[in-house]
Length: 189
Image (cartoon, rainbow, N blue to C red; front, top):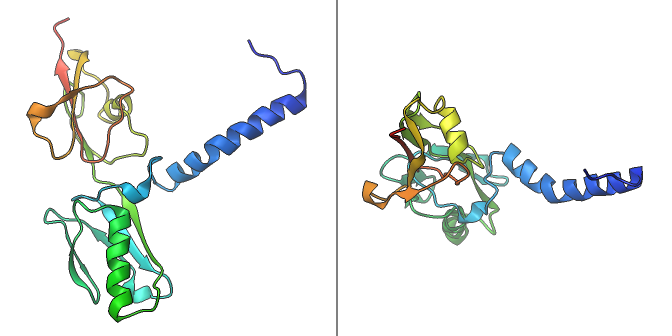
């Protein structure tokens, strides 16, 4: 067991820990995945907000539908599915700057991520809201836990956009992303 030689040593360790962890805690608290949000690829089911500083009529919340198209004031229809948050910011900025505003401050944020799906040998199979930091174990917990027949060795993840033939074998600590499908198979013993 580790022992601190003084209260100052203890406080320094706590301070160093908080400096390293605080940004991730703050991001998770705001609903932002710990990874780079700018590179997050948008897809059907995501609830996004586009805001332009000082222009309230250009601030909208929009849930992406299956067609992945967003109708934005002055710019019309924009294909959003498959585009990163950063690219969408750039598209809106360029469209508004060209004809309407001088140097608009455009921000795109993901308010709610598309769901993950948990199927197979769990107590409540179905779709569940994505939570930043979601792992296989946490997804199974959301789905009510394993059934008595569940195999903890035969768990597979089908990334969004893949077919069922491209399943990845996963463990309890594996990460789950928005839109993924987790399949828990039946075990023999």
